[in-house]
Amino acid sequence: MVDDVVFPFVGTRGQSKPPTRPGRTRVGVVALALLTGVLLAPAVAANPIPPAGPVLGPTTVVGSKAPAPSPAGVEKATARVLASGALGAFSALVVDPATDQVLLEANADKARIPASTIKLLTAAAALEVLGPKTRLVTKVVRDGNTITLVGGGDTSLVRARGGDPLAGGAASLKALADLTAAALSDEPVQLVYDDSLFTGPVTGPNWPKNAARRGIAAPVSALMVGEGRVRPGALSRVGDPAKQAAEVFAGYLAKAGVEVAKTTAGKAASGATEIARVESPPVADLVEQLLTDSNNDMGESLAHLVGGATGAGASFSGGARAVTASLKTLGLPTTGLVVADGSGLSSSDRVSVETYGALLAAVARNTPDLSAIGSGLPVAGATGTLANRFLSGPTKRGAGYVHAKTGSLTGVIGLAGTVKDADGRVLVFSIIANDVKSLNAARNSVDLFATKLAKCGCSG
Image (cartoon, rainbow, N blue to C red; front, side, top):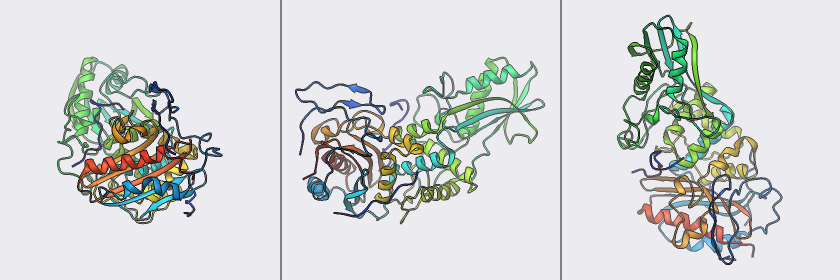
């Protein structure tokens, strides 16, 4: 079972230092914040808590004047929820990124099944290896009367009406077809589609069964449109995303007046000339979408691209090696780390909360190339996979104040991100629970854990 997914037809879209070892509830109404800090719904109350976002940035972390929590205070605030039993076998970590002091740790170096929280590591590797400004190219090349549609790993590619990829939009096959038609004469052409950029298996090791049919993820391909869904707005995915993309492209060419005599799979000729291209949003924007919506297709594409860029291979195994190497380059602890895929769908993945703590501390300290991770974190009660959480009951006071990546598989719940406490101090936290008996109970517990941190000044 996998439920850490926001489907697009339903929703929207430096080196870190290892932490050093150690050792007041405010009542109000939270005003929800977007990733950029723009308020979604200002609250009206006698003594409202100021808006939570954005929490990441040098003015709120580095040199913070807010009272620093103590380990004893944090442990007291969270002890009851951690002892509830709903979390099964769990690990938890809370760090003050301004000082790198560990405020709470429980089995912090124990590597556990992370589910979709591993997308944090995929995001870090993509930003470090590919670069935040890099854009992925889908192009058409020509050799005689043969044109070849060449995939570049852009899983954000849409059919039409994509808008400006540099202003929140996406590249589209229709735009590419129009550019291609303008470069061709009236002669019929043969269309070849080339998805050879990615190699190896199209599904990850130990993935949930029938992932494509259930809409969890498409077969991994360097060429796809509309996330490989069988039709716009559908849940399930096609078995061959590249073939589907070529058929859609051929349809747009026909509408533009180009006769396509034949469509086949193949590779672009070595001497072919580029005649048209479209480019994705920058990698930084893709990372934000990856994290906010927990986009499994994008996670796999970015991991494959990282593998290809480093020479490890644009495959599941190559991506895994390259992501691991990138994390070491970033100076993150990797004890027990096992990377099997880029999305977290694999039950073979293993990550410790210590790894997440170091990464998120670097993000919180405003490490420039990693900033998209901070802005991509879902906001409790407002965006992405946290839009429908922290809305009622004892977790409501965490809404807007908790910014975190979610994770969920059968028997697995995770939450890792940042939280602004009642005194205005930004904290980094990570909690992963394995072998849980009830996903709902475990999810409520990790949300309550984060809320306890939001409510607590914990400086006493």
